[in-house]
Amino acid sequence: MPRIPSRNQGEHGNGEHRLEILSTLELGRTLDRLASQVLEGVIDSQDLLLLGIPTRGVALAQVLAERLARMAGRPVAHGSLDPTFHRDDLARIGTRLVEATQLPAPVDDRQVVLVDDVIFTGRTARAALEALHGWGRPRCVQLLVMVDRGHRELPIQPDFCGRVVPTSRHESIQLCLQEVDGEDGVYLIKSPHH
Image (tube, rainbow, N blue to C red; front, side, top):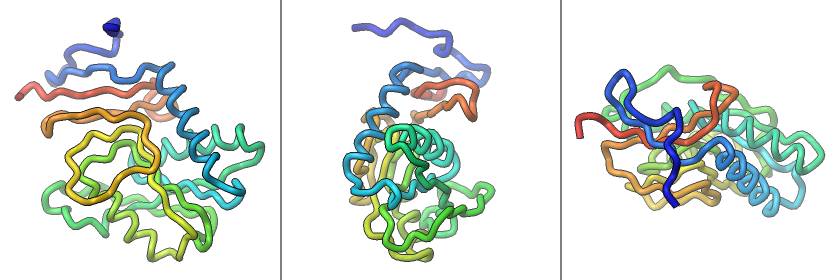
């Protein structure tokens, strides 16, 4: 069924074209599904620790923690883990301002779910695993992403995935969350130069 163009599609000032992948409603349903899947795999939600990977994964972890808390009937611990200093591709991708890692509880013997908006090469997830190792020994570590866009360079796959969106290397994925962007949705960004 063809998608009706939304006000969020079309040309932007920089010439990029933004195509809606998930609408507000679809994103909400996907978040509920992901939260349910996470909850199904945990014996006690008190052992659960969501750690968002900056930048967008931190906001996504918070949104998921709120949904999980409603489903579980109790708060779910969440924080952030910045893997910047553990990356092996900084020369290629450049650096951004490092964010402080915020752990609301020790990671030892916890079920840790690393949360990121998009998985691409797998190098961010690898760096996050290495960074997490410095904070303790979780009972298990899982990876949750909103979008898997392909192009893996390492044998890393998400345990929980909102949507698989095959992309070319010059395209990108943008996750928008109400809490950060004032809108909800997932978009494919096409560069004007390709």
